[in-house]
Structure formats: structure tokens, C-alpha cells
Length: 304
Image (cartoon, rainbow, N blue to C red; front, side, top):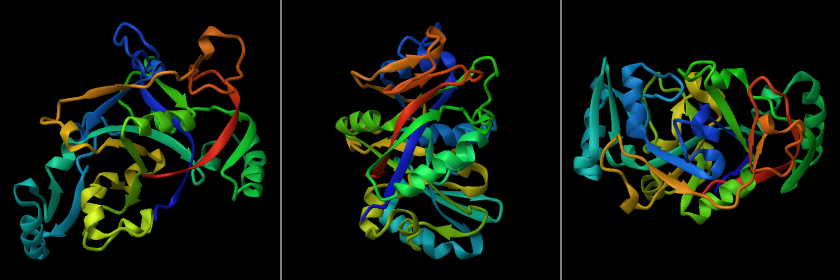
């Protein structure tokens, strides 16, 4: 059984043109165009050292062993995955991952959930909203009046984009995630673990600590290793990862991408209005220096 997700808000952090449109992009997210890349690209970025927020050279690593302890694991996974297995040496360790998982189309979003909500709220709102969520913990939906849409600076700091160009699009997740699901996109919160030591996600069933009971075969078929990242470096991102599992949609190179268009989603741009109330909007853009608010319905979602 899947564990319940408490997803209250999503953020997409990019160059402003890709969020709301501009010279660099005519199909922005605010118009419903969702861009998918792949983990292989982020591994390449991570190895180049160019972008600490987006790049991660340990994407899709399902096992890490000291070389002296790795022989049996390499043999077992070699028989299981055959030519799909990548064995990569890194200092005294060996990293194991699947080529095919690195080529699955993925779109990622920062999120605010029940664990990070209080951390990212302004002090003036923290007590009020904590009290409301605590009283309504068992409900499917919780209504919050005057929810502040502040963009945490630590999110923006992850990206190697000039301060003048970087911004965030805020997404109220209900309709957005529903439309993605209609397009056969699956989503799951990322699990954060200690990657500075030996680990084996499959052998030790580490996924059950985060996602509930799951058979070994299910963990393989769902490519569960795509949803694990280093706790110390990335846990603050509270990432929601959306994937296209259809094998026919898998890329053939790390540089490939694709876009899915979601119709009928609403967009609020605070730059175009003196009104700072974004209630009912799916996509909300506010310059990082502006303050806007909305009546927000917090939903308990389930990963798929």
C-alpha cells in the first residue's frame, strides 16, 4: 500500500522566460507545457560541476559498495540486468545503476508538504497555519485562508542562473497532478538517504521505509531507484518527481527531451494586476520581491 502524500504546493524554478514566456521560450509552463528531461542529463551536469541544484552525479544509483564487498552484488545484478547494468568505480567504492532508468522521461518540482510547510512559512503565518493543519489532520482537504506564497531563497540559491533571470512558478497541485495522471504520468516524492556509505536499495528494501510495502519485482518494474537522492545535499528540495513509465517513450540519449501540453489550467501573473489574491489559480507567478496570497485547499495526495 502506498503511503499518503501531503503535497500542498509545487514550485518550478527556472529562467523566467521558461516559466511565463519570453524571447527564449514560447511554450512556457504557465501555458500548460510541461518539459521532461532525463536523469542521464542530470548525471552529466553533476559530473561537470556546473549546477548543484539540477545536476546530481549519483542519480539512479541503486547500490554503492566498497570495492572489496562488491563482487557478489555485481554478479547478482549482472545476471538480473545483463547489458543494462552500469558498474562505475569511484575512489574506494563501486556504484551500480541501470542504463534504461537514466533514459526515462522525468519532470521535477520542488514541493511544500506537511514536513516542510512550517520551515518555509514566514514567522507571522507559521502558528496560524500550523494550528489549522493540526486540527484537520485527518481530512482529505483543508482550507487555508490568506496563504502566503513566499518563494524560499534557499530554493533559488540552488540554481546557477543570474539573480535577475531566475524565478519560480508556484503551482497548486490538485488539477495539475490530475491532468498529468490523465496523460499517463506517474509521480512520487523523492526519498532522501545517506549516500556517503554503502547501501543497496533493492537488497535492503530501503523503499519500504518511504513508500510502504512493495515486492522486489515491483520495485524493479517501477524503477524505484529513480526516487532516491542524497539527504544532506538535496533534502531541502522536498522534490516531487513525475515520470513517464511507458517504455516506448524512453529516450535513446541523455540530450533528448519532450513536452506534454495540459489544457485548461489557469494562470495568475501578479505583474499584470494590482490584486495580490491568487485564489483558485493553478499557476501563480509573482516576482520574487512581491508578496501574494490565496485561499488554498491543501490536499492529501497518494503517490502512484
